Amino acid sequence: QVQLVESGGGLVQAGGSLRLSCAASGRTLSTLTMGWFRQAPGKEREFVATTAAGTYYTDSVKGRFTSSRDNAKNTVYLQMNSLNPEDTAVYFCAARIGPLYGPRPGFRGYEYNYWGQGTQVTVSS
Image 1: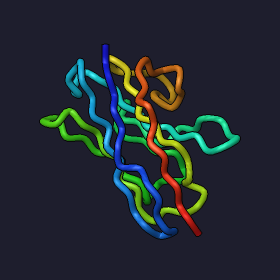
Image 2: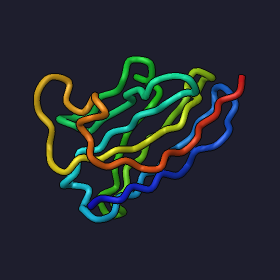
Image 3: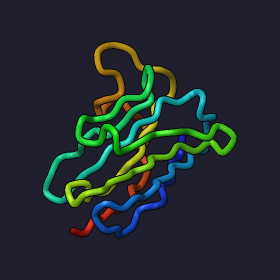
């Protein structure tokens, strides 16, 4: 079993920054493929970033968001810069034991077995 706990969400003005954290327990980070997703009100869950076969981002966050990991703390981070109101959503981290392969690995929610509780990010204009 893998438990994921997110933190770091909050209210920020447009142009500001936040860093989300996702602490994993139950497995070491090196054995996990990690992903970030978000869900805005009234919208479907959307892929944000993944560490599957490298680090990939959805086009709307490229150049603004950076995913990183601290294996010693068993934690992954999502640094979010130049935030805009369209980034407002509940952000979730997700994990899968083992690697992913194939076209666009880690881009789909069903590829992950474990999910955090989510953390709210609100960007005011």
